[in-house]
Length: 398
Image 1: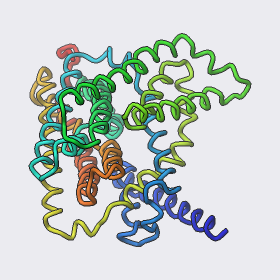
Image 2: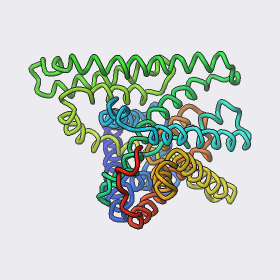
Image 3: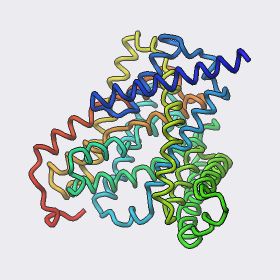
């Protein structure tokens, strides 16, 4: 009984801390996720100690709850991503998405390998440099009322492509962590396996869902579209692990499948309470796993500075080069809009720590980098957009 009460008290502390942290962050015009992670670090073992180290170890109830939270989060992200969205974006968005993955991944891998990590682990670390948090940028664009600008459309379109490529890349680097170095044959096999799984589920599955979505309504339960979609989410999350990929990839693909149904808006609405309840646990637990004592060392602070500079410059360069057809100023806006890593970098860092790929120092640095890029981007992007001349969309074609 005492043990059960102890868990409930911890859940209460985590949930309240998440709400307070998110509220403070949003009042400071920062993403709520920043506040949730900072709250986790504050109540974690290395600060107030409201969460004990053994409570957030791998396989514990809190760790499992956090895993469910991130699976549902990626399902919700997939729910907002449709194949048609990829078809509507033009050449600029495609180039921004591709270069925005290649440049950060290459620079991140070189930096990690230069710091003594073998290539397989270096590639996993580099994966945390790759994916853009579209949610953070989209919120800034929405608040400024500039979603109709050509730069905004390119950013959001590229973010969709960016996320797809990042998920594929994450699957490849996760499967390469078995040791023994990198062999071309093994790499090609893993790549083919990842591409095949994503192609079959993402391409074939979406077409099946478009034609057979009506069976989601067949059960008497009025919540059947949600419950069946969640079953598909959990099933594909498990199946993706059987293919050597991360569970979140399967959850993301399940969301893409559900996005093709006519119940899409209803599902998005019904997911909100689940996300509000469960995803804060992932971000607070993520923050609690940060060993703040790491940053008492000047070398760790220097590493954080270098990693953040690489993260900012690489995304800015990739986005800028891909969007040059919009002019230098427009390309700069796109490059800045692609900078924030947000929850995506945090998810990859968490996976790396659980897999034993990241040391406590690297984990803390990657999470801090994700936070810093999320904090830096909104004010800079807002300033650039406010000073930008009114672009005539007819003059630019993405």
